[in-house]
Amino acid sequence: MDIDYPADLYGGTRTRCIALFRSLSVEQSVTIVPLNPEWRVVDVAAHVCGIVDDVLHGNVGGVGTDAWTDAQVEKRAGMSLTEVCDEWEGYAERVDAMTAETPYFGVRITGDLVLHLQDVQHALGLDIDMGDLATRLGAHRYVPSLQERATEQMKLGVAVELTDAKTYPTPNGASEIIALRCTSYDFLRSVTGRRSRRQVEALDWDGDPTALLNSAWNTYGPMCTDDVSV
Image (tube, rainbow, N blue to C red; front, side, top):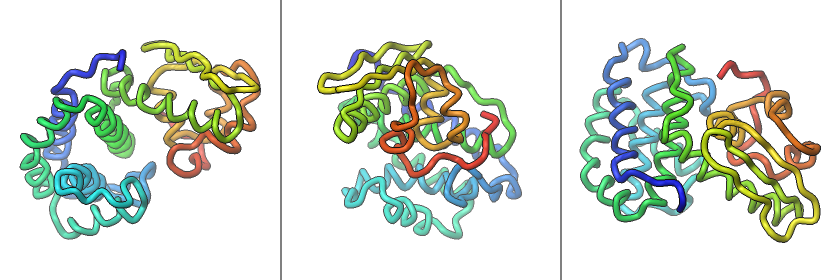
């Protein structure tokens, strides 16, 4: 990996999340997070806590599926946001050792975590840090998987220039090429379904992205139906 992953990046992002969660009122903790699947803030916390719980205990069958994530939320139904934070902090030493030993694992869970932090900040009307390292590494995680899907499914080469990070050239094996230029934040929010199709089409494309958006673009289900303000 040619973008440095600080061993404490997941831990630092977790600390930011927990500080936010612990600062919220009971009413805020049950605010609906519209960019998540009908989850409240406390459910988002249950999910990100549940990820490390499941990984540490080897419960990785169906990883990433709706059933896997729903079970994380259901397991913590009835727990307060404070109780979920307490459980999550209890896993810190073991999961931080894993991210230090296996940087790619750290990139994966940090990218997921910063997405959900941004989702919660959006739901609560809070400022979002759009240029932090966790966001740039999150985008770094998702660019290669997009390129692989496009090449395998469509024989389409997608070159991506993240204007605040790095450029990803077109992979081999493509019969047609398009290019995208945007910030890491815009890419991360777009490829994970947090933007509408109109917003994704409005990014800086060289070539027509229609076929890509119809097929291999989405990482997690369909794009938002309405434009999103962040």
